Image (tube, rainbow, N blue to C red; front, side):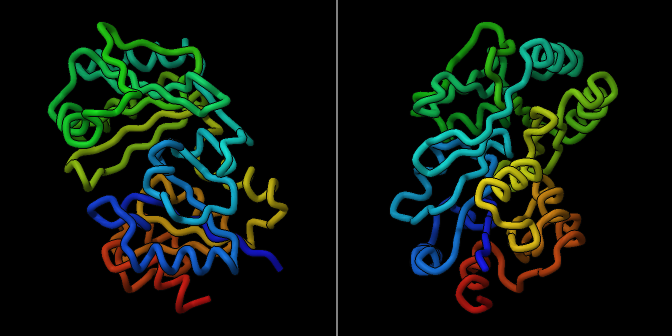
Length: 275
């Protein structure tokens, strides 16, 4: 019987330094010879490829919170983009709250090349993120006016919960089922992320696509996570595993709560000692 194990990256498989430890690396590559391993992340293909240099990937990848499902060889299995009109509506709503988003769009489907469009007036958290993590990233596009793109994969706001929570409620009220809304705390930056996706562009729907693609029933899939965008995936997978540092809301949905955190190689220890 084939089984699939899929892990989130940030705060789950990656440590707090946003790296894969030598122990996790060794365990992953050893287990990849025995079982099917993959990831489900908010990260793009290029960032995932960077983190996983030297690690085996032998199954489709769930990327950008589920907006994209691709093979390790960059073959697109499924991609969900937002209509430009919807994106522009979201931007207009955000302006009422005096905040503008990042827009992540795909430019080249064959090479899986994305662009990150930056608003002209970034807040403290946006500016900090770009300067600390993306200052040399060639995907960045500085704009005089942020607007929807033809192939927008996701919209991302960063800021205080006091701003983003009412903004998320307003977007839900106006756009209803036309968009997927995810609001969650971001531990690296000490703020909140508001992520907006195609209504079928989340991790749970992407997991169903991977399940069908590999012909592995959901009951035979184990998922690892820590954050709110993992919850729907937890609800449909046969086994859901939360690292010890996961949010309480995530632990409530988990079938297994690990004793170890992402900084203690929780996922790798599970793969090594529980399988």
